[in-house]
Length: 284
Image 1 (cartoon, rainbow, N blue to C red):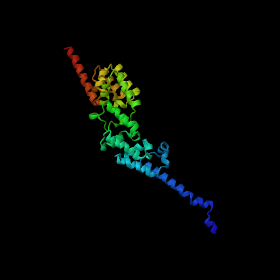
Image 2: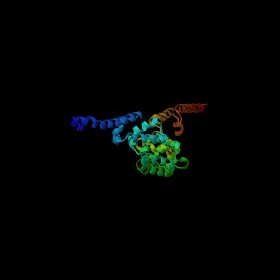
Image 3: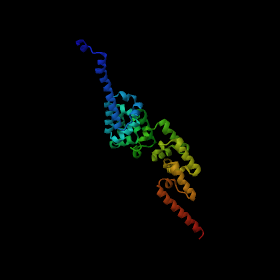
Image 4: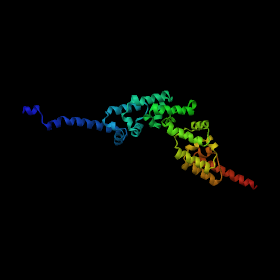
């Protein structure tokens, strides 16, 4: 009897030694799942895209969320960001997140209260290398004129995640191919930063072709109103130009596109009345 008590059987080992370790791992895993769900992060997606997450302590996740919260990111938005970029769940805040904060504060010169707005507008900032991605793009943007009164703000820091070689330079070259000088292109993108976020093939080319071929436009007008490119070709440009052409009237691009639907209809009516008055006057 004493021997049995001193040397437990295999079944006794399996009951008293192995299960606790398994149970501990299961408990920790379930805690992580509950934590992710509480953040509105899809656990299956997070574990698939970030396999390291399975073996990472819950404390790692908590340190990341505390860091984001300290940057001003509200908990309601945190889940969306972490679900979008699950790799952040196991990052080291001191080597990956705080360097971004330092860059935004001291190089881009974003006021601290606006840092969270930069992140909310462009979460990709959190997973972009300061040295390899953000700083080189900042230097180019400053060369283009994004400095002084036109410095980047929380609304335009999303430009920093654009690749210099693959994204920004091709757009600049396309605009120059239309006959614009380098200085004119710089003025255009500073006045309308959204130009640098648009696809050349899917956005810029179709709009230029429609403007030149269908609207018989003058490229000089695009210099005066580069915001033309930021409007939807199918939802605004074509429908409004179609109505102008139908009535046989015209108006500058800015007047045609910037106003609301109500404002456009009012201007259209005014132009129509002027046309009718002019026509009647000819016969008096």
